[in-house]
Amino acid sequence: MRSTPSTPVLTDTDAEAKSPSGSQTLFRGLDVLELVSEGSISLSDLAARAGLTKTTTHRLASALVERGYLSFAPREGYNLGPKLLELGYLASQKINLARIARPHLENLSNLTGDTVHLGIREGERALYLDKINGTRRVELQSRVGERQSLRSTGLGKALLLDETEATWRRCWEIEESLAHSRVGMEEFVGRMRDYLARGRTFDLEENEDRVRCVAAPVRDASGRIIAAISLSSVAQYMDDSRMGQLSGDVVATANAISRDLGWSEHSAEPPERRRRAK
Image (cartoon, rainbow, N blue to C red; front, side):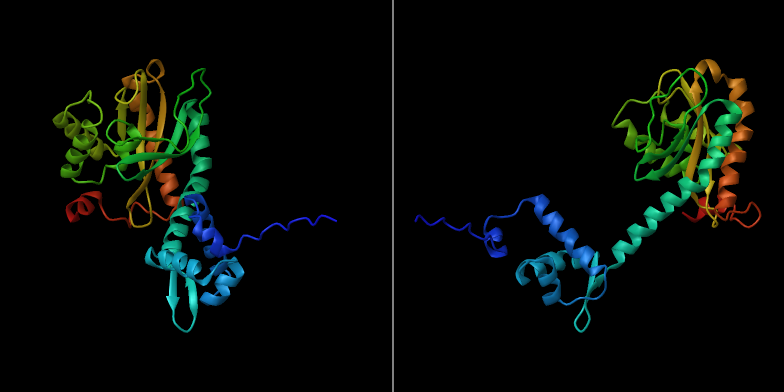
C-alpha cells in the first residue's frame, strides 16, 4: 500500500525565512495592537496569543513602542501608547464635528437651495468632511474626502482667517509652485484683510470656472478656528449682490455650529489678539 506524504507544517520560523511581505507585516502589527488593547500583556503571552515567535513579536512590538502606538513597562508588559489616544481623539473630533454640524448644514442648504460643504485644515490643504447637495439643477464636482486648495477656495480661506499675513503669503507661495494663480499675492493678501474684517470669505471663480461660494469659519470653545463651511453654486446663481445677501446666513450658520461646540461670542479671545500671539 502506497503511503501518502504528509503536508509539511509551515512554522513561524519558516515563514520568517521567506521574508513576509509588507502587508503581512502590517497585519501582524495590527494583530499585536488588538491583543494589547485587551490589557497589559507580557512578551511571552503576546507571542503565544499572536502565534508568532518571540523574536518576531519583539521586533513588531518594539517598532510600535518607538512610534508611540504601544508603551512598555518591565513589570507590566505592553500597553497601548499615547499615539493611539491622539489618533482616537482626532478621529472622534472629526466624527463629532460632522454629526453636530449636519443639521445646520441641511438647514442652510434648504434655505438657499445651494450646495453646502464642511471642511477642516489638513496640512496645507482643505479636507471636505461633509457635503449637502443643493436643490438646483446643477451638481458641483466636489466630494467628501477630497482635498482642495486653501488659497483658492472660500472654505480654505476661511480656515486661514486667523493666521498672520506672513502665513497668508507663505500659503500663496506654496500653492503658486503647484499651479499659477489667477490672483497675485498682494491682491490675495488685500482680500484676506477685508475678509477678516467681515468674518467671511469668497471664492470668486478662483478654484473652478463658473463656481462661486461664500464661506465662514467654525470655532471651538477657545475661539480657535477648527473648521469652516461654504455655500456654493454656479455663477449665474451667485452674483455679487446675492453673495452679499447670503453672507449673513453663512456666518450665522457657522456661528450656530460653533456655539454647539462650546464657543461664545463674549468669552472667546478676539481674533486680533490670537493673530498677534502667533
